[in-house]
Image (cartoon, rainbow over all chains, first blue to last red; front, side, top):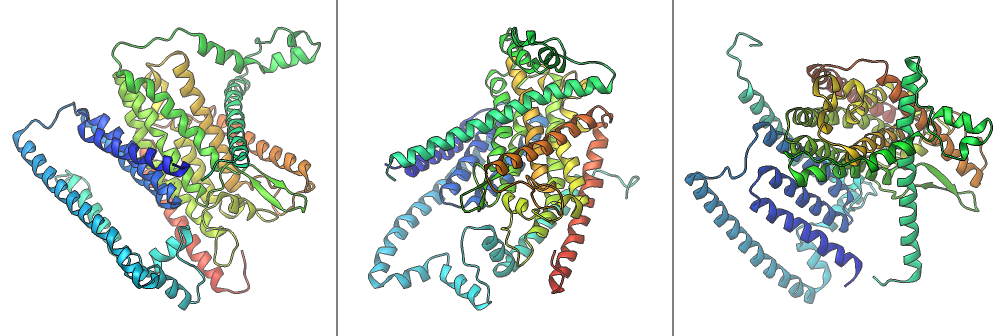
Length: 199
Length: 376
């Protein structure tokens, strides 16, 4: 087993173990902290894939900002251990467990089927195989070449930005609009004014 | 991957460099504490620490007493004092997190320096390559990401202490960090837009690129004064320095998040705070003050040999030291903001200012890009 493999197993254990401990820990603060461990583990896996930009965004957005808010809320409300006692919550968590197990089965089935597919494909030749893959890399390369832009698809930030702001401009705008709507909704919901101040 | 002696040597050198850099930053943090005590003393008409001395150095005529008067040996004594104090753990704390918190505070402060370029090295042909532990393409984002983890140390310390004042400090700190991170990130966007305009060599978010763009031309402080101002203010808030030291404002929160800490655990918090200041000053120097380059519009006067390397590093350290002095200077000049004032400055002043600044520079960069003759 070589160095990167060892690192992969280490960080995979970290992210999976963190996730499991998050689910099973009784105290909300511990759960939040284990979730941070899990997120950092996933970021490290991105680093092993040479996707530094994604890894850093993962830490910056999830571990650094979202989880700080989670902790902030947990501490502010002072939630004690074992909050989920009500029977309705137990029912809900049962349903959630069933759904996630189902999704996991589907994922594993898909993975085991998907693992077979390239071997069928490689009999015909490598060109077809890359075209059927989810990430149509050659397509992007062609497009960037057609625009007279020498940017090739790579993990670098420039290529990332080019893809986000040129090829996937509309999805980006839609996602942004969705977030804006959510933000406006939060502001309206959290305002308790009865009309005398601010209006 | 096979392990061979060559690789092992490379690995060993990397580890050695990392330890050297940690040592340098820790030493600078220690001496920043001394500088803080000395500068505050001078500003208040006192003398400051001038009694500590090593046994034999003290007896050297003139030099010995001069060093003693400067308090050069004080950080050593402070460190030993923290180490040998009785370690008291209050009975009401949450033990695991209580012990974890100082480490969580220190590690991000020391990790950010890995992507910090602090000088350049010349090979025989005279080509320069930057001195840096890890030359990441997204260096500045790495710094933001890691330093955003630093807040957990304070939050955990406040929460695990299980007592009122530290808890308030932790809550305030998390709110403050989130608020000022936004302004900080937005203030740097126009800087990187300016540096990596279409056609320039610099890669998008690299700190090395931003330093080399300031070689022989204007410092970015002169081109982007508003960004520099917002970044500096946000830096004060992120390092919890005085106009913004909400988490530990000693007049209303006793000691804030480290009220319940003593001996070396308190020492680690202390070192972490000053390490943050050192690294923050170095980042400001790198981005806005031209890094190791001499003066705006003047090419480096030193030769392209190891002498130039050393002088460059020295110049970088001098700028950083000035900024550390600036941090201390502000602390002993400006009174603390109230908590609601901190929040309103962050959200209603700095954030809109940063947004306007960004839009102005986007328009400017686009206009310069459309005009073929003008090259920034």
